[in-house]
Each structure stands twice: as structure tokens, then as C-alpha cells.
Length: 273
Ligand SMILES: [Zn+2]
Image 1 (cartoon, rainbow, N blue to C red):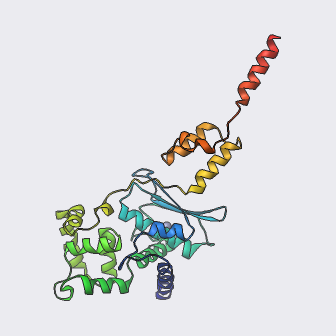
Image 2: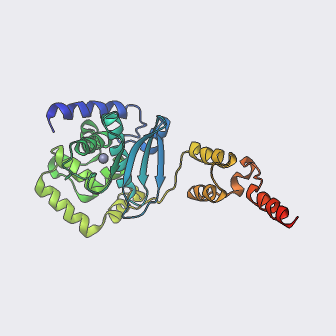
Image 3: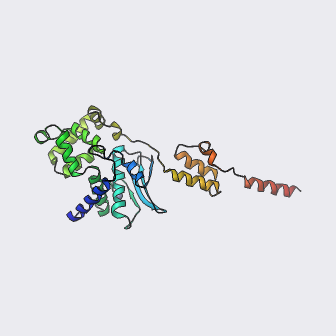
């Protein structure tokens, strides 16, 4: 990627970040920020081997989906990558469907590389990383980083161990040898243990399996049911996705005349006459 393109992406990531709530150095809750900014965010446990996420436009809405079967830190990166597609590529070819191949440093597709770079700049901007290393890591300049320091960075910036390590390498904060050493230390001590030992956010390292569907979509399903556009089974299935039952939304449902049965009764009645 050319430096002029990289700079353009940094500027766009920076201006998106200004609209997000930042805790101290990292974005506190990117999902909430997206909803506040009007994106329709769907989160669903689609399965371990399913796609990681997608972005599309539906009825003028920007819809972003993330699979909650991936570890939370990875899901957050997927979300940041999808935002990258929205900001950089809207009008040039949405939808995008993403999996392990597109959301990785090794993707050779230009648009995927751009979205990955956007995500890295959004989650771990250069200046915030510098500030964190300076203020929060004791003797960084003399001793460099330990795996526990990486866990601290993970917790602050809400990223995975791999993402933190790759970003630090790209920013020139660790060299290839140090990266390898930190990687080995991670394998020995496990990320979950590292996070716990620094009082970090252990939830980052496990899938949330969360189900989150924008309320308008439930309204839409109920509207269709009330107007006889979908059968009760479809409504039930859609509600089940949100852990809701027909009873939960009973006060909003129109009583359905069972037309088919009436017709059948009339028909049988007519035959027996
Ligand atoms: Zn992508």
C-alpha cells in the first residue's frame, strides 16, 4: 500500500475515532459507538467455522454483522475492519463478507488490506500507543516489553494478543526477535492467565456468544406477521434468535383469524349440504 493511501486511511480512522468514547487510551465499546452513529449492528453466534462478519446496505441502512463465536477481541477487530469497509469503500462495492482469510495480515486483496490497516489505526493509533508505553510501562526504553505488558495493552485497547503484537511490530516498538520471544512466552503462559495476572479483561479472550439484533428488525418481523406476510412459525423463529417468545411480544400481536381452517370448514360444510 502506498504511503499516500496509508496517510488517507490514518486521517479517516482518526476522524472516526473522534466520534467514539475513549476510556483512557483505547475505545471503550466500539459496538455502542456504532449504534450511536446509526449503524445497524447485528451480533449472533453463527458457529466456529462460519464467516467472521459482513457489511451491507439494506434499505439505506448500513448493516454490520459480527459472529460472536469468535473471541471477543477478534470480534472487535472484525467490527473495526467492517467499519473500515464502510468508511473507505462505501459506494465502491459493498457488500463485503469476511473470514479468516480476509481479516488477516496475509490477505493480498487491496480493499481487505485497507480495511485491516484502518482497523489497526482505529484501535491502536500510533500516538496513543506511544503515550501508553511511556506512561504505563515501567522502563519500556530500557527493558522492552514482557508478555504481561502485552496483556496490559490488550486490556486497554481491547485487542487480541496477536493484534497487539503485530501492531507493535509495524510501529517499530518490537523487532522480529522480540516478537518471537513474546509469542513463545504467550504459548507457555496462555493469554487467559496473562490477562488475569495483570487484572485485565479476561472476557476478551473468550467468545461472548452474544445475540444482539436491532430492535427495528423485531418490529419489522412483527409488522409482517400482523399483516399476514409471514406465518407464525417464521415469527417464532425470528423471536427465538433474540431469546424472545410469542408471549413476550403478545400485546403487540394482532389476533389472527385462521382463514384456512374457516375455508376448509366452509368447503366441508358445502360438500355435506
Ligand atoms: Zn473485509
